[in-house]
Image 1 (cartoon, rainbow, N blue to C red):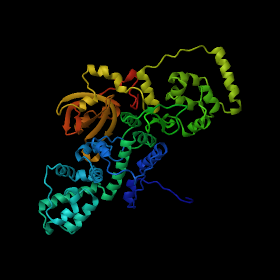
Image 2 (tube, rainbow, N blue to C red):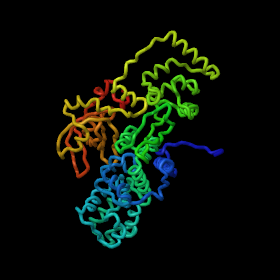
Image 3 (cartoon, helix red, strand yellow):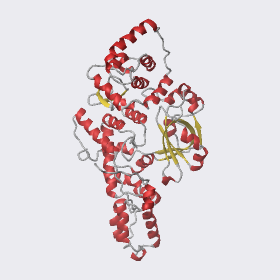
Image 4 (cartoon, helix red, strand yellow):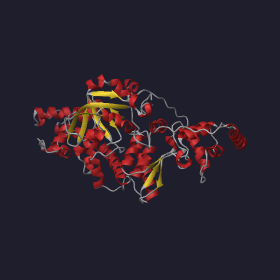
Length: 510
């Protein structure tokens, strides 16, 4: 807007100055869902939006109850995944509760466990007076929403006191403690319902069209709790074919490509996942590619106006292999013979001159193939993910000798069993409401394992936990119904044991 000035200030400074603050939020998942619905209509002829998506779908709720929610909105965090098998959502209002209950307010107000006990029939639901049932009936006499807190204050306490209105001192004290928790952030019911709608819609799309769900989710990154590598792995576990970056097939964004069976599409990784490649340089390549595929590195260079470094970035991400059959090292070797030409008029002549020089002077070079582990490391380094074997699989033989079990075996063990498992670190979460407890998720070639580190253990192994990308952990298994954690007592840095001895692909200093 003309003549508009924008001044950036620290939020804490604004508090000190007593300025009014307003949050203007943009939800990345709304854009992601819009793109997903567009793809659904374009490729499968199904026209839907948030208002018309099939409601109360049993398959979707069954997936949610299993905590198979990676990538969905709001219910993908470790805390939410741990709560889903306990809440066991079967209706939309169950999802409203689910979204609202995993918040600092309800947690610090000690509302979570009473609600769960009452939902499971382990604790009676008590309404001392009819007006309380009117206010808290939908949430089993536990205030979970801001509107309920306000109505309890108005209808049950008259803004002065519950005891004066006939409630026992103990009950009034407990209620006040719960309502006081909302000072640490709780949801209005309307807010929770709006978020639950997006959570349900994203879950429905993942359940019924995982291919359509995967592509826009990759294009929306960074967003949510998980890296693209985990999104890709999860999609493949749901039967989605994911195809590599390709100089001839990839667009900037990840896109859908026809495959079999019918109505299922493959996801082609886009050039956006080539690290160091700018959008402008990718656009130059895509503009000249048109309907005629590139036939060689020289062909790309002749037709695409841009720096040689852009081609190097694509080669490092192995983007010349799928269609031109040039492995990473071969493509880089061919590109090294090129040079940046500032005048397109002389590009063809320069290319011919270089070709003659190579014919006369360059000997035939046999490049030694990279090891399988080395290829995986390079994939992570230059694309952030791999479609090859999982990094931990290269260590499995050595890990087995040390009696380190797979993540799936660890999560399937009996309650109380001590064991050691290992994997790449996916997520580290230390919620303010968790009193210093750190929640970690690791992954190997078999699946994921959920870890809990109590504050004393976290402090003891702090450096390794926060810096290592690949760790081994030992401790007892804790199983509460379908919720399973490993209570970590020891952490070991496994970076020295990574594929090909080249360092962990997820570590900051590989």
